[in-house]
Amino acid sequence: MDSVKILVVDDESRMRKLIKDFLTKAGYTVVEAGDGEEAVSLFYSAGKFSLIILDVMMPKLDGYGVAEEIRRVSEVPIMMLTAKSDERDELKGFSLGVDEYVTKPFSPKVLVARVEAILRRTSSKEDDGKVVDGGIELDTTGHTLKVDGELVELSYKEFELLHYFMTNQGVALSREKILNNVWNYDYFGDARTIDTHVKKLRSKLGPYGGRIKTIWGMGYKFDIKAE
Image (cartoon, rainbow, N blue to C red; front, side, top):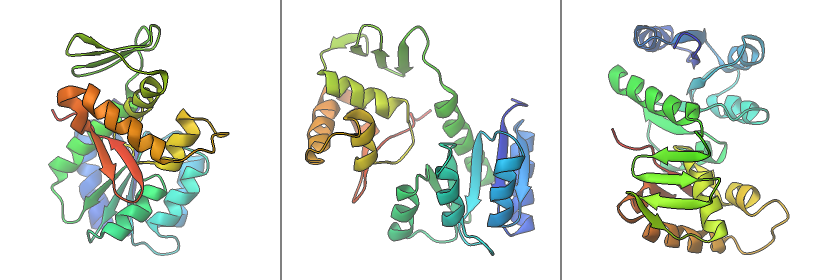
């Protein structure tokens, strides 16, 4: 785990120390930034990061500005820390590609658990053409789905959509992003086709259909499997 490096960005030194202490104890390497401009500078100069933990309210450049800059060049997971829970703020963050929100105050142990869950999701690799998550098994070679060991028939686009969800587990995905990646950039149809496919997928996934969460006003997220 020594190679897993996390950038912690917060203008409060005590908060950075708290997070760093718990993450370091869990075996992660932590790099700190005290404001948004320093965070962007470190992102480009300090090597590859596996995760960015980012405060919203900061001097010079706020968390949304940092997220927007990073998303121009990278899909590194971003966890946003906020002092308040406001649906509009969260939707703004999700539209910028933020993966998860954590509201202050929070339990450091819960924060570490969330970090571990995000890193498990992003570090998971396809083995022998298979993407396996609990009782869901996608075979990308044979283009088949098994749910709790039972073969389930999917259309081509249903398969592609589920594969996209599973390989972006925990990531808030806008309808536009889904269309661009599953239906390709040259698709000009109605975005409601996604909702139709999601409805069918939920039904075919049986007990795991609830893993596909709706983000109202934006799109969908394939939830991280509960441990």
